[in-house]
Image (tube, rainbow, N blue to C red):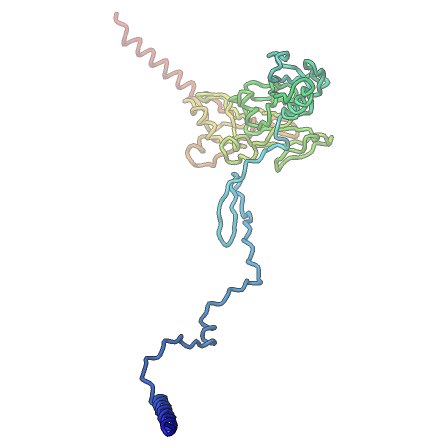
Length: 389
C-alpha cells in the first residue's frame, strides 16, 4: 500500500505534463486566417484641409455707393433727363408754382365764405373784409384777415373757436376778389380794371378782358411796381423814376406757342397796354381804298398793299403813284414817287411801306376822258338800236 501512493503521484505528474505539452503546442500552431475587421480609411489631414470649404471672410473694402442720378437737361416743359451709371432716363418734375406764394393773399374789400360745423350763427352770407383788413365773426369778434391765405385764416378761426367748440371744423373759401386789381388798356374787347383770381397768368387775364380786338397790334407793354419784383422778361428795364419795371412782348409769338415762356404770371397793380396795330393806307384810283394792318410785320411793300386794295382801277395812272411819309424829326410830309406800272411789269423792284405811310395812286385824266367818251358812244349806240321811229 505504501508503493501505490507514490505511483499515483507519478501518474498525476505525467498527466499534468501531457496537458501542459498539448496546451503549448496549441499555442504554437498558426492561427486560422480570418478576414480582417473593417477599419476606417486613413485621412490625409493636409488634403482634407485643402478640399474642405473655407469660411468666407468679410471684404474689408465697403461696397461702392450707388451712382446718384444727376440732372442733365431740362427741356423747358417739366421733363428733366437724369444720368446714372452711364444711363440716361427722363423723369417729369413736379409742377412748380410760377408765383412765390402758392395761395391767394386776402386783402381789403375781398369777401370770404366761412362754415363751421355745429355753428349755425355764421349763416350763409359772405363776410366782407373791411378797408383795415378785419372781419367780424359771431362769438369771437374781430379777426384780421388781410395778408393771410385761406389756409392761414382757417387755422386762426379754428384756434379761436376752440373756446366754444371741441375740435371745431372750419372751412373758408373766397367769395369775391377785390383786393388785387390790374389794368388792361388799349385794343381789347373789355378794357378796364380786372381782379386777379389766384395765380393768374397774362393770357388768363387777357381772356377775362375779352381778348384782343381786330385792330390790336402784336406787341404788349407791361408795367409793374418794383415792390412786386422785376418783370421776368429778358428785355425788362427800370423806368427813370426807379419805381417800375417795364417790358414789351410779342403776343402773337406767345399765342402761336413759339415763345410760351412769355406767358408770365401777373401781379397786383400791373398795367397791361395793348396798342393798336400800325397801318398803311392806300387811296386814289384803287378798287378798295382804306387802311391795312401791318400785324407782325414792320413794313409792307407797295404791291402787297395794292393786292389788299384789290388792284388798280382802269383809270389809274400807275406810273405817277407816290408815297406820302411823315418825317419823324420835322413831322413834315415827304413825297416819294413810285412807278407802280414798272413794278407790276417786273422792270422795277418793289418798295417798302412803313407804318402810317400813304400810297396814293392818281387818276389819269386822259384815260378818264377816253373812258367817258367810250361810255357815251356805247350809250348812244344802244339808244339808236333800241329806238324805232
